[in-house]
Length: 300
Ligand SMILES: NC(=O)c1ccc[n+]([C@@H]2O[C@H](COP(=O)([O-])OP(=O)(O)OC[C@H]3O[C@@H](n4cnc5c(N)ncnc54)[C@H](OP(=O)(O)O)[C@@H]3O)[C@@H](O)[C@H]2O)c1
Figure 1 (spheres, rainbow, N blue to C red):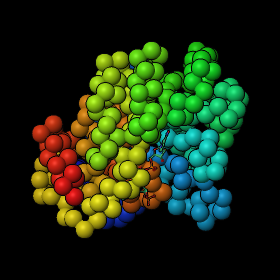
Figure 2: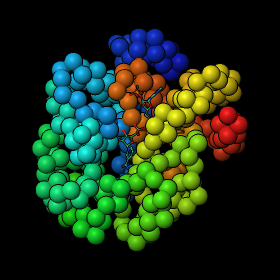
Figure 3: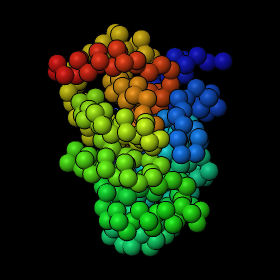
């Protein structure tokens, strides 16, 4: 049997192409519990806000990326009706159908008030080529008063499994906190990264208190963390929590927080999926180690 190190080395060397057996990879992955149901979810997703392409040539690397994500045990794909100039959902539906991977997936999409809730959900499901989405989230807390009841109704009718809300802006944190306090939510999605830590102050403790699963968007600050560390060597002590790359350094930092269910790094590259799924294996940093990570980034 391959060791984890050999598995990652094989995946990295071949840019994720054929060596790591799915069963073993999926077995070794970190999973987190969705408090609302007790269901276990693999603790690394994928963000698809740049999946809005139209040519076969442009779709090919996205198809390879999704295939690799699932081959390595990934489940949660985050998308939205507005992503990729409105094309991402349809591209995902087409590619996941071609790959025959729907049964392994946990689809998370959104409603945003541009159409009434039921119509927009039906449109999303049609584009995603599915009859049922695992999670629908109110995008950026828009039109909550009408959209949340529509999502709850869809949940009662069995069209969706979980209901959530999202933001990616500090300006909405106060409103998000108030919604988390007053509404029964299964999921929240928020921005949190090694150099954007405001969510730890109130939102993550509240998610733990209220039993709300947390998806983390912008886990790399839209790539900003890679720019900050571009000319820096990865510290040797990163190996203490099974971390081999900067990408894993940033993602494992998030998984070290007990409130975090699943970061959703956005990528269109197979080699980055291999890297990111590697962060959901092995150890995660403890609180002392996380402080060390913060000090390193703050000093750059
Ligand atoms: N309000 C909301 O609901 C909201 C707002 C923003 C985002 N989101 C969701 O969150 C997801 C993530 O956000 P994001 O994609 O904007 O930002 P991000 O995940 O912080 O960063 C994405 C960037 O990192 C690069 N990258 C990914 N993995 C890498 C790796 N292992 N090594 C080096 N570079 C890597 C990507 O490029 P490559 O493609 O080259 O890998 C891309 O440039 C979105 O896709 C979306 O699903 C939701």
